[in-house]
Structure formats: C-alpha cells, structure tokens
Length: 338
Image (cartoon, rainbow, N blue to C red; front, side, top):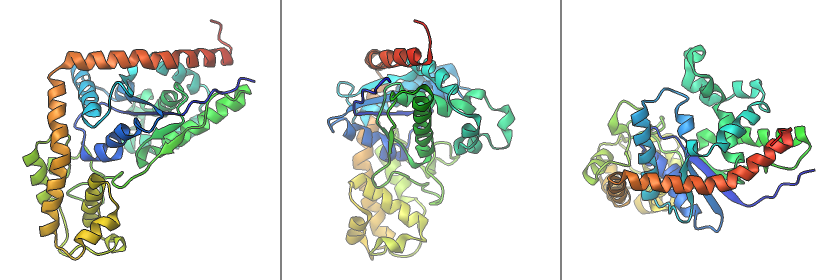
C-alpha cells in the first residue's frame, strides 16, 4: 500500500472576476496573510481556469488576474513566505482534474448548489466546465495534498466534496495517498452582507455600487458608502441577541468586529445604546484606516504589471515543484505508464 506523506499545508484560491470587495477581504484575503505566519506552508492561487467556466474577455481576464494578485499582496500576503501563482501555469491541476473526473460520480455533481444557483433555468446552456468545476477544485487542493483549506461558508460544500473524492480515490485504489482536507471557516465577518440589504451577501455583481465596498475604493468613497448604508431607527443593543431580527444592524456590527478583529460582544459593549448617527462615523473611520492603504497599494502594484507577472511565474515554478511529483505518483497509482 502507498502511504501518504502528509505535510501540513494550506491551499486556497479565488477567481479573478474583478471588483474585489470588503467581503473578500474579511472572508479570505486578510486571513491568508495571517496564516502564512503560523508556521505552516501556504499556497495561494489565482484560479483563472475556473474563471473560464463562463465566457471571459481574454484581455479582461489577464488584467483581472493581475488585479487579484495585487490584492493578495496588498492585503498582506508575502510572495516570499507564501507561494502565489495563477492556476493555468501549473499543468498538474488540469491533469489531476481529469483523473478525478473519473472518480467523481455524476450524482455528486448534481447536488452541488453553486451550479444550480449560477445556472438557474439555463442549465442546458451552461458549459460542461461549470458543471464539473468542483472536480477541478478538488484537484487544486489534492494536487498539493493540502490539509487545510480556508474558504467562505458558500464554498464549504466543495471542500466536503473534495474530502469525498480523496476518500474514494484512496478506497478504489487501495492506497493511503491523499489526505482528507479540512475546511477552515473562522472569524467574525466571514460573511459580509450588502450595505443596501442585510439579507443579501455583499457581491461584486450587485447592480448598485453603493451595496459594497470595493478594494479599489478611495477613502472618501469608503466613508460615503458607510454613511449611506441602510440601517433601522433603533439604537444598537447591548448584547448580540438583540441583533437577531435586525439584518442591517447586524451586518454593520459584524463589519466593525471583523475590521477591528474583536467580537460582536466587544463592539456592543462599546456602542450599545447608541444610535447609528454615532456608530457610523466610527465605523467609517475604522474602514478607511484599514481599506484605503490597500486601495493605494493595489494601484501601485498594478502600475508594474511586469513585476506582478514575475511574481506569478516564480510562484508557479515553486508550486510545480510540489505538484509534479504528487501528480506523477497519482498517475502511477491509476496505472499510467511513464
């Protein structure tokens, strides 16, 4: 039996679809920078192969790939401490994905809620890539034998599928090869809601730019959006239970807690009993202090596209050095001849 050589390793990726938001920052990007200092190997990917499951303008895709790489760095990721690359530069992702396509069952794919949400009534017109992309996501993770996958709540189902795929591969071939990765979902503010509707997730696809804080927004824009965020007429409660039926209030308190890296209870101990006329300016100041430097750094990096490309190419070489031998062993396990 082939025994897995398990090295604790973090892997995560984001699609380069443009207009990254505060939700991306609190839910993922900020955590990525922190995890690289925890003494565990960290690999972060711009998943451009996932992006083309729906049609992309090629020039826009290249620009958005660089923008996301810049955002990773601006939010604290150090390309020397972590591996940062774009997925399409490492062939092992696509090769392992095909092997895993032959392990995954069609019924598993049919239960993926993300495909249902994106396809809606047009499922027959969607690309095959969109349908099977959870298998590519599994390959992204298992190509590096990642043990921990920081994701948002909406991606947890895909990590659970990856666990099933790893277990089935190991069982089918009688090996202990792929580790069973754990999703990492933690921290206040991991699910940031719209500034215009506290029941909807903050989204870059929302028609209203006022519904979100973009990572490229300047200080004045950030402050203005916070001031105009939807609220209710009541004062803030003194305990978290008082936010239960107040989605807009809960969202703004969660954002403050996430940015300040404190608990909701800590926020309410400070602001409980106060009206939003007092809370919003404090939140705006906090948001500007955190987000405006990120916006400036993204702009600085995007003015040097060749440097971003160099960083991604270097990261791809380092990623390939890990992925290639794992892929080679997987191919040997399934019976391929070198």
